[in-house]
Length: 188
Image (tube, rainbow, N blue to C red):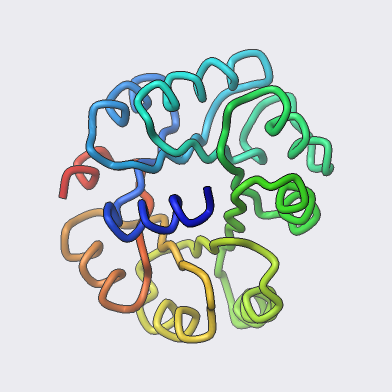
């Protein structure tokens, strides 16, 4: 499944990130193959993922944003055994590790706010903890170039990607794909 995910990122480098049911319905009608789920709770996440899988798309659930899931490894087990999700997104290394052990695709999300956070991101990427890394905000092209040069796995730029120029710049800087909740970006 990981190779299918990597191929989908290369073939459709704009990842639809959905934050509500309206966005989900719109994402299901695009040609994009990967859907990042950024909403839901423990009672509806299975249904949300089923809708994505029914359209033959790859479903990646941001476990940190699912109401009712905590920041413990059990969140990865819940997604693995209670949904059809292909993988998870998290900012937490312990959840990424647990999900990887369960055979889920792992996307570790980083928020870059200063040089200290950048050093930590470099350390994680060099250690190879996740299958993919997502860096926010996505408009830091020099940083994206540097990180893509040290990463052996795909790098996704997310956050504050607002137009075609941002998409092209992020991809040209070395990002494999971008993620966005902006529906106008999904069809570029």
